[in-house]
Length: 251
Length: 327
Image (cartoon, rainbow over all chains, first blue to last red; front, side, top):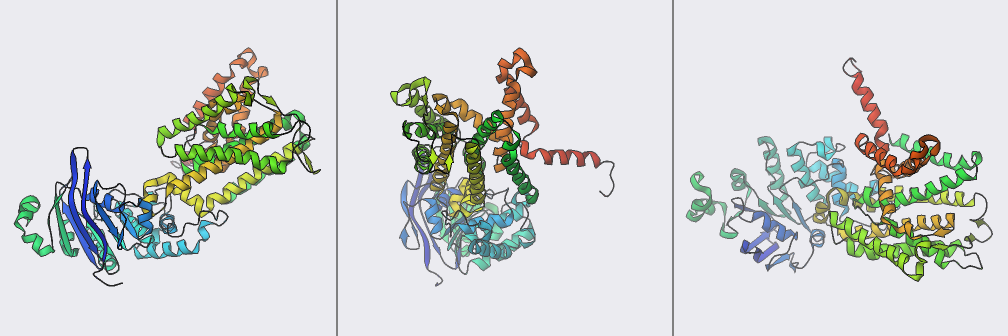
């Protein structure tokens, strides 16, 4: 489990929707122990990139490699089982289930055993154990029996991450985990990401620039489906091309 | 809460077990029919209530179970339940596997229409080919037996057998819903996209549920054919697919006991509106009364009959609250 090992690699990824080129020859590399942030204006293709990397839909061109294997033709569930976890921009939880059951069901993905119809899921030690630990890790222990739909927005974002972790992934693709969070919740989430990055390779799509520049080890800037820069945060800050295209007066 | 539910279900089954002691043969026949429909409703509940797949062709599996029972029985020797029943269930499950494999590639309203189309195909096969005897249907000469223990033609044995099947199906589905497989189906109902992103290949899960559901519907069809000793194409028509859908909606989706209650409520409402003693000559328009009462129940009972106690409780508490202090 060495730091710096490439876990996910997307090469020359292109996605066309009819005549519209949503992604144009994008290269991205995620290594263990680092946070790779992808920034860009709305419609730059950030979510499309996550969707293609996670297998929600296939690329028009290009390849995706996960843990050294070419997974371009793999369906999303297979990629997930191989160690790819993702969170969604909009909350994608099971609102009618308890917080604990949300995590337990996610953990069950690594241990599905659908034929054992006589065994109660509540007694499934493996999934219950994992759920217990991710609920604690994301600070939701007090809320574990609450229906997930009743959580606050920030808590739902935490639950998203907890569910993502419950599948024991090696690569995390996080689509705006900080969206709509308060200052305190943002701090907690950033602390958690900083802890997670030791063992995982993380792709972070985020609009909160302060957060991105605090936590990212590498930043990719996208405009209209193309990568215009990919560098360390300091170099991105001073890149005139990026300043002109995206950061504007803030830089 | 869960406790009172299990007591309610246990009470229902106890009442059903005791019913033949106090009832004549008409009542026994009527309740047998309702129990068959309850099994049928449970099969659809697995798809609609548990997995979130709205199937509008469930009657095809029911009909295939029924036709298989009649077509495979011999006219000279009573067939054995031991092989006839599993064969009927397998025939229905087999067709469900085929229909599911194709229809589960679609979603939403397309899924509803594709399942309806496959059911209509089965309907026209028995309606328009020599195999099914056309609109007249076919008769079952000898009812199946199990050695010398069970003869479904004698006394209340069919009632007891049907009740045992209902109990087994109910218990099986209750255990199944609590298993990892059942929880995965619930996850698919609530958020299929998330299930896929988490690592569940949802298609095989849905196909397994669909096949299982078809098999259970086939069991109900088998029992229905044995009860009446007769099958006709109406058993595969979309009217029946619609009726069973109404049963589970009436009872309350997402609850096994909803299917049970719904089957009884539907049959009793039907008898009520067909009764000439109450409605006189209007009884021949019973469809109208049944339809209106179903519309009313959907409007007034959004969660079905299962949700009624909670609704009443909320109403009572809600009425008390303004004046009550510290309650």
